[in-house]
Image (cartoon, rainbow, N blue to C red; front, top):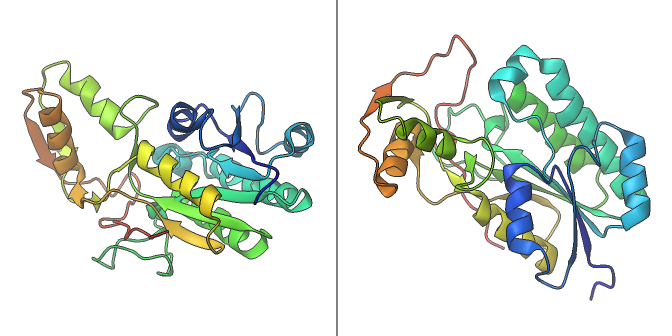
Length: 262
């Protein structure tokens, strides 16, 4: 039985971090420490070291990331600094402190050519800078963390927190206008609440080190997802299907994930 039950969460002001705060604080017998970027920037080694010295976490859940796909294409060096170099910093300090690392990753490490839901050991082939940096971060954790997990998810959204597709569609729907949405990209939209609960399962059960998938059960396009959102919120907006513009940034056309059982 674990004596040290402290859990440090980086990037705690993002949608997943805020969901963890809502669902996990004062629950499950663990001591939760939520640190936003202003208190712990993973690209600053000294800040990580100071936080680990202060809190001595048994677990570190890394929700810190540069997740804007378009901006990653325009600023690949910044995406690399956060999603790769920052993850390297965190991995090393977790090793130094015998801390278990749980790192959040994405379906965007895949190219979408499989046309069936991706499983944990499928070959990665990122199509864009964001996917590549997340893949390299994954690769480092798997190759260097003494004890760590990768939790991949797909089309992550929160109904209550952050900047995401679900909340963007609601904002558009409130105007009463038609909404144009891509119909030729498919994934498994995943509520942050499901991922938060999955992470808690990991820290409680401590399964074998490696890659785990946590995603929604329903495969759909962005167009399908937009229709679902407006209907469940009783908006009358018409959703117009459009083709994706691959000239701006390439995205996988089909990247659903098959869930891992714990």
